[in-house]
Length: 453
Image (cartoon, rainbow, N blue to C red; front, side, top):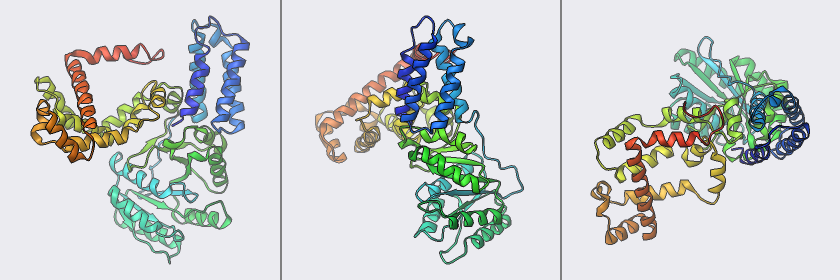
């Protein structure tokens, strides 16, 4: 996410580091580079102009001239202005109403509305502990209702049935009555989309809005359409009282133009971003954290929150106790670690939240970590229980059998064993107080104000 923008902005700011004092000419040069980086990211021109002017006005002033490290001061200014452009602070869902709280999902066809409805329902059920029911009012798209029924089953929420020959407004009203009788906390209404904005769609969505009086009206839009996403959201906002925007497919958006343009153009906050295909791949949009990620500083708070929410703490505690008792790290533990990584969204999701993660992702451009993890798990599954517990047993003949069972070459088994040995060695260091040393080393590479104190 935002790889192109991140690398361009980082290069621009790196070029200014080491200067004793920033001159107006240097700030103007940096401003031109910032402008080009944002335009290449498909950020809307009015947003680019305003952002660059704000940065230049602040950079040439006293904040920089009084600083001992002008490059760091400019970095801080850019991060603060990015945060402002992205919306300033996170704006959570407003569910403060007499239940059921109704959330209306609007957007064009193909934007990911139905998938996002499922992701949001899962988040409300798991994180907010709400009783959720979903309903589809899309009577036009073939299999749209069936798609939502399947998604609802996958995320474990109630589904209110509807059919293609029903009136969308009648469906919504019936679902609302059902939600009231069942003491549901949240009703999510998935509406029909079109390939483009048309009057019939607008009138239908407006009628649905009037019928169910939602507390939240969210516009779902594909972030990969860049500033067009912001312009489409603006067209909807002009006709419908939107309360927020959900940006989907941000994991495939290397530019970031939509995220930087939506708030400015629509005046509506981005509330969530879709960061993958999995049901749990929906994140709250924190402008300050996204700004930090764009500038290559990572999102450690987001990583910690994700870890707390998705990691099996019981299994992690069990492994920690095992290592404390001097028992050896084995392939069972190694497999469990990789499965935990998959549960957290995979290697890419972890890397982009680490400081300097964008550079690591660029270095790993030709590597497919998800495929490597699946291969590793397949190899470990092909081992006997005894081999997993006692890795030293695995010699040439066993390697051939394991490779055959996993459908891979012996070289792949050898590679995995080397990776296992390296991980085992790292575990020994952590057990001996190496974590503190690792964190101190990491802190030395972080920007001022980051890292352990």
